[in-house]
Image (cartoon, rainbow, N blue to C red; front, side):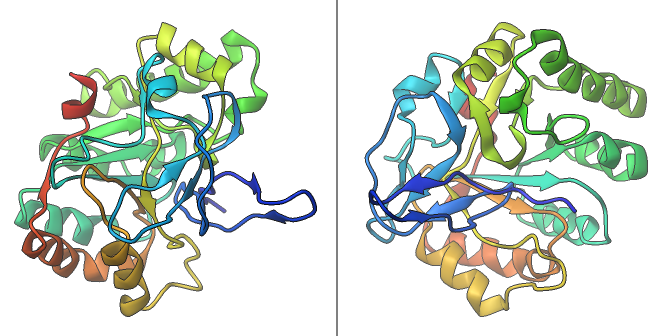
Length: 267
């Protein structure tokens, strides 16, 4: 099964709260938590105030030294839409249709299985101007890969398969599976020329047999949207495929526009 979960945070000396956020996705925490330096663990967020950027368990400055990001300019009502794509179950085409209708660029973080099983959709993503980014070949816990060769093998195998499918070089943009990372990982990705992307907005959308209702999705994705948000969704979600056109319309009515991750990392 393909899921993305965020990090766990210690909320008290005796209680550990692990709440799935997404997306790949991740878990988000509901209470405020102090920001930390980039180190090791699972990516985690807290949302102390609606409509404002969350507090992450690593600071933007500590991440940027490794060309890693989770948030754009919080002074601009700009959204960066991303999808984690572990396998194809019929929902990607309507997602691409909605993005095209709104002229909204997105980034699709793909694994090896997706490249092997749905090459025509990968080609469509690239042809329609979306970023097809690296989510590793086998979707392992990358924080457990301390060996540089093993770490890079997960990335280069995706690059090679993408080149076979599209004839193009893959963008050097990477997302750690399940949001699991270490500072050593960030450094190795940086030295390989990669930009690492986490996220600042997501919701539990990856259980295909327990999909959120449209209203539940809107409550999270409208209530927690914020300027500069890097949005993480799953392309396996039927709810996402069904609501994306209307969701993008609602965000536009709130004054938001849509940008490419290249805007954040200077590509």
